[in-house]
Length: 279
Image (cartoon, rainbow, N blue to C red; front, top):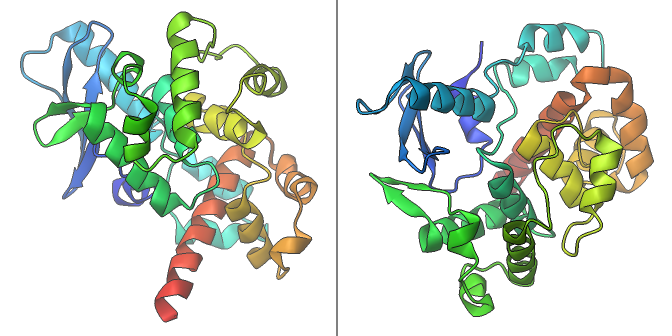
């Protein structure tokens, strides 16, 4: 069963959601433009004014965001006799969080380029507060229409740095229809080749986008946290673990490779925080 607390702990703290007690709240914008807050605590809770169609769409979105359909028992069984078996107990109930929309995913992934996760979260939160729509005490993530009018200087005020230019460029292409993000039918290699043809989207960004935005069974093999996590588990230095080594370790896990990569990344993040506290 999904552990909402553990899953929320690994989500980008962007101001669009909150966990209060055992209930997860998410501000959403639906296809018809309606905005509101949807909650989940084992049951789904919707605004009273929403009809059946709106509730169905919101239920599907929240299930996607939280990974409610993830078969964790099968995953834990798959890694039970591996060097990663301890992760099942360490992170029991954790699922991979995903973005409510592909556009949100690409913006948030670009914001994470070449910075640590904590700093990236602050810049994303700044952007959400700058351009997002407030709903109660949360924000709906800004649409491309709301980010496009922002100048480079305004985007840089969110502390995006050089990533401000990439964000603006990708947003403009997306609005023109020149950049497609609904790549549901493309396989991993095809999608990466397509995405990396655009300025601001390298291989790491493309791989993380596919995992976070579309729930593709992939992972950013060159990611420092993932490489460092594998190094820790196998008693190596991070310099000894190259991208090809990451793939050699993870590819044998087939349909579970993406989830395992996420667990390893979470393990690295947790141990790095513990190390910094000790210092």
